[in-house]
Image (cartoon, rainbow, N blue to C red; front, side, top):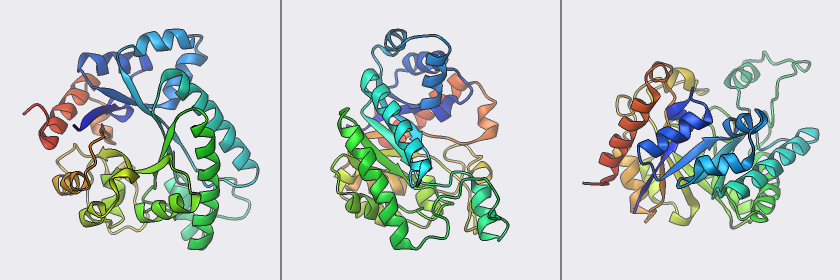
Length: 295
């Protein structure tokens, strides 16, 4: 049966203690936690025993996201150190998965690159901007393979989230990366906004092997013709009030036989200024209705 996970974006401005408390009060089955919130908790002087006590009775579905996974050279070394820390933490708190995102994560860097405004002396991370498709797949796959080996040592799976404004933006590309990496503990997240914005249809989702899908992010957004979409603008809507045909995507996911986690992801500055408990609760009710849970 489909399960609903509370995503940290639903309670963006809460600290970790508040976030976990809300998830438990609303009877979410699991949580998908932004890893920086966990690090802030630990770096403030609390220990992992206190963290486990907070989480008792609540499944940590995933943590992340590890950003700019295609990093090369010295940046690659930093990426692997970040992965090692995340995997060690993930094993200790019993998380099942870690999220990986393609980059560059900064949409303005991508926009400036393609607009000819990113000079050689600009220090902003540019990743594999300008690389060929083959190079993009090959180098990202090598990094994913290394990360997957590390994660496997800790009993953790990985899922890739291609961001809609970067060169490696589509699930079809992510599938190619996973096939090239050749690791069995890596899959993808079906993120409705990124897929829909990149033109990947429900029909394409329905064609996927259910074992490739590790997570589903249900979200909404408004239409754009911009090839470099800005999520801060385009996702500033309540789930169900945008243009994405959410039910068609959910039905497509279900048609694959996938029966896993659906996560309450939302990116709306307007919603963030509301009561986070109310936001998370309404999202949970919406998800239960859309997924046919408790009906």
